[in-house]
Image 1 (cartoon, rainbow, N blue to C red):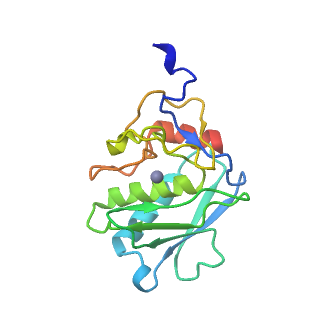
Image 2 (spheres, rainbow, N blue to C red):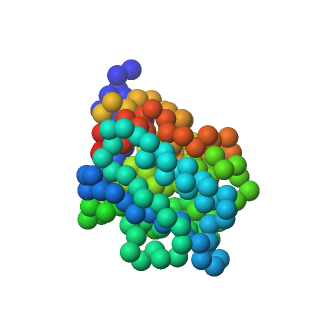
Amino acid sequence: MDLEIGMGITDRNYRTNNLVSQGRNISIIGYTGGSQALSSKERTALQWAVANYNRLSGVSISFTLTFGTDYQNKDMVVYRGSGGGAGGSAGFPSGGLPNKYVQIYGLNNYDTNVIEHVITHEIGHSVGFRHTDWETRQSCGQNSNEGTAGVGAIAIPGTSSGYNPNSIMVACFSCGENGEFDNDDIIGLQYMY
Ligand SMILES: [Zn+2]
């Protein structure tokens, strides 16, 4: 069946129309104030997530991580939000800048690697990744299409066709995540940046 070719039903890594400016060093702060403070475990997971990006070769953006409450002058802030269930949320880049606000919630009883996974995923959105399975949300056991959502969904050349559950950018996560990029995620970041 070569109907898959060009029909939009294959799963590759996908990017938004807008990206962060090439070469930008992104200031990112882990919030430590009051009820929205990251826990000690969540701060460790944020350090691991930032390291996932900073260790990549062939990627022009990088991150400088601090902790504190002085978030106004930072490009991104990761904090504990109040969503139901367990997960995170973030937006997409605009004006050459990453999405600023990344919240995580309900994760403190999970393994640090799982929290690393969620933060790495949300930073991924913030620099322009769509969900790898945006057309199906298969990772969530669903068959629903997120559409282009006003931000675009451009397939990234060189990433695998077919469902890749190991991409850190699939829509849903499990309690067994290792927090690391799949090779397709790295190809995607190298392509975008
Ligand atoms: Zn997501």
